[in-house]
Length: 481
Image (cartoon, rainbow, N blue to C red; front, side):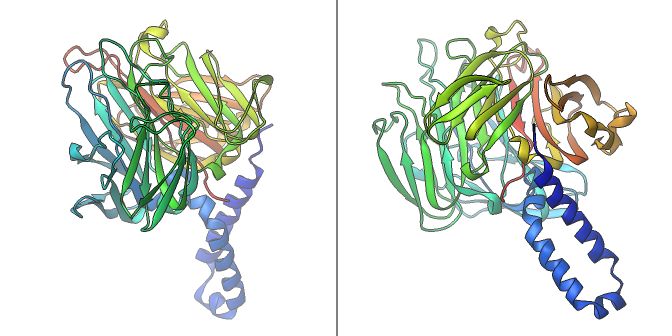
């Protein structure tokens, strides 16, 4: 059974303390300094998991791994989508030259900031300063988008204060054929402090000649980025490669252009910012994707002797860095592991599916004990896409759920939002709501924990070539203790 008790306790404690502090009169505050001191101390102690929900923060580091050029020279566009619950000002600093791009966001709104495409990482294994540092005066959520016609994906950035020092590459199988260039797994580490030392233990060969099994060390200073890519000589799937550091790093992982499953057309870029290994979990709810018949999942083990079960059936025992892949899931599923693991969910290539919509994207499933109580989403592309939200929550929790400020319990939804399906997961207290939403910002809130996933598919448009395009990402999880 999924256990949300710890998350609920922390967040209810936080809300009570905020209420207490806001409702003490000046006279009471003067007369009760000890109470105020204890309340403030407890608030600080409990605030990190709460403010971390939905990946909100005021300090972010991001990078843009390579988005493959295929089928001609399709124009690349890179962007940041930034939203806030408060009127906010901030800046985007390019680590290459220190240039500054200021921004402002109105309360409850979002903005899109176009980014110079020369910041995209170049394959080759060199250290670069191709990163962005985003800061603001109030909490914001940051969504990172890499888009070419027919090759798009996005990720939600993790605030610097919630980053960690241990990660594991999650990619996919390489592509090498007569029609396209070679496309490998790729991952990038961004240093947030000077004198950062990366230690990388390779689970496959790299394009710079390092063999599988080699351990390499890479020194980085603040804002510097190191990218690894698989080799075109041998299997290039670097999934399971460990990346550790002596100081916190931002870690973006994925694939330059993956076919999912491996030999089924067509390919698409995969991007996700990975939570630290200390925030991995043992129970996950995978949700069926609207407009698709199948989806694919990989369970990546962080420790030896990790048992994996899907819907209660044991399917694998893994060593550290190994993964189990199920390439024909057709329903919402519960994945459980005996030790903490990372679970990646993949949208399949169009030709794998009976529904010829979209191509691959990758998202990370949120551990069931790290659900949140509030999360934002912004659709990363415009009206040429059909956008969806999948919400995972307890069957009894819909009465407190709101979508864009409107209660879901009423059966009515904000303008343009449509309930597509409401599904109870067998042998579980969990359910899944799938909503079709219009272009723009959306906020989901509840007094009970939930997980939120955003994804979308291009509608057929011969001029814009969006018919085989897609994106997907998780909208945050509770990080930290």
